[in-house]
Image 1 (cartoon, one colour):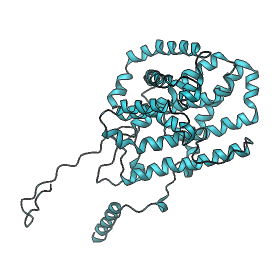
Image 2 (tube, rainbow, N blue to C red):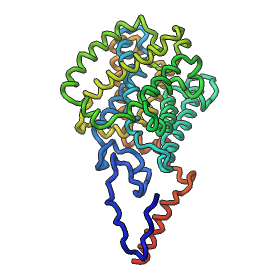
Image 3 (cartoon, one colour):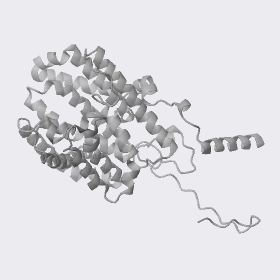
Length: 392
């Protein structure tokens, strides 16, 4: 198991050359700070990849647009068509990218710490904040429950579960078929969304597992010019299908939240819709990513702040809803919908900026050094450095 110890320091076997970390993941002997433990957008040199930052920003804009269209779409078939098409792929695209950057996750202490401070703690804070906001601003006397994610917070709860199970998906032989099987099981389990929004956790799970399986060459494949051209008729067909589905398909399917029985459909439609929605999401996500620019743009830097935009824009949308501003926009028809669309995109863009990140970093990325034991290996390295400094 181990090499025999050399006698008297002779015939020592030379150590293998140090290998640079791959995908910006710190090597086993590299000091691991919070900054290093975070994926750096997939580049070996540690720099952020503009393509993924652009994709995250554009996806979060679509999320904000979908939330702002929701109060306006009931009597507007065009808007509901756009809503259904966007809801088919905007969260799957975001989840696939999240899975892609979770590939290096394991049970190493620094990564578990990052999981707690970057996902679990923000979930607790924002779940409480949204519950209080709904109670006092929305005049809703609902109890505060950490086990029932409200509005946007379901994604943090789901991401915590998905990332924690990442080692399992690396271990099993057929991860994607297994994830699809669990998603189909969730689609026929009534009441599954009552605790921790577990319906979405299971039904979006295949998107996360797919991201874990993807490699850089897969993204390079869909960024070719031929794919970009083919994506145009695909999106046109998606809009036509979306128009057809408005009066015929229950929009609840697009949320991937409830079981078929909860929607009032036959149980066997759950697995079929799960596979159909996953296939459509995969196709439209590929078409969406094909049009994401690879170069640096004016919004590339905003891609690092998409979680801020995601969690904070909900307060803006709900404030407008409680104040009755969506009713005013609805009375102005298409012009009102256009104004809401522009304002929603501008608001989420502003919430992704550096000044907003600095203000809310205490809630999104708390350090919480006081809550964790010091890593023994890091302490040993620090003592060794101090001894070397003193000896010099």
